[in-house]
Image 1 (spheres, helix red, strand yellow):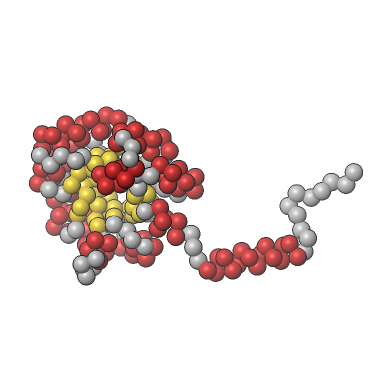
Image 2: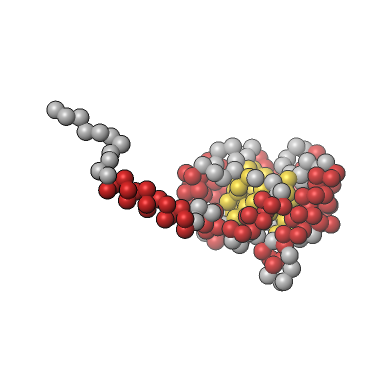
Amino acid sequence: MKLFLDTGDIAEVSKAAEWGVIDGVTTNPTLIAKTGRGFRETVLEICSLVPGGAISAEVVATEYDEMLREALEIASWNEQIVVKVPLIRDGIRLTKELTKRNIRTNVTLVFSVSQALLAAKAGATYISNFVGRVDDISGDGMAAVAETVAMVENYGFPSEVLVASVRHPLHVVEAVQAGAHVSTMPFKVLDQLFNHPLTDIGLKRFLDDWNAAGLEIFERVAR
């Protein structure tokens, strides 16, 4: 499964990129607004920090003609950019048009398999199924993910199912179990994936035993 970072924070992208495990970055208007920086400059810096990665940047218009104009502008900035489109009627229309133009898309704000079907039919590169926001209203967000994965596989759609609105490491584990292609998450959740108490205990024991034995990797050369 691909791992994407969900952020507009350059420092977070830089740190995650150092670990060498992220395949892309997703942004949205809220995340970009939090940075206090320009949209274009932020997206392009993210592209430079994750070379070859898929970087999702979202249109903000809601009427088709203006959405298309924004999408073509955003896509022109860098070949890594994936145009993020909301699942509204004009958004699906836009996705179909961008697909015809060989421009990758990420259809966002998907909460049901019926919505996901529309995105897949329009040729979406990524279908962003939100889980946390569904869980917040006592639903089962991961159920729609599993249904979407099955739908994509059953009908041979080329779309990848992207699990979004990830709140904790268990969501990532459940995304793996559901067979999702991508999981995008805040930096905090990505960082938490490293953690396990037995790892900490085991490492401490190894180092204590090593130091007690007085061992060294770089042996001193007698002169």
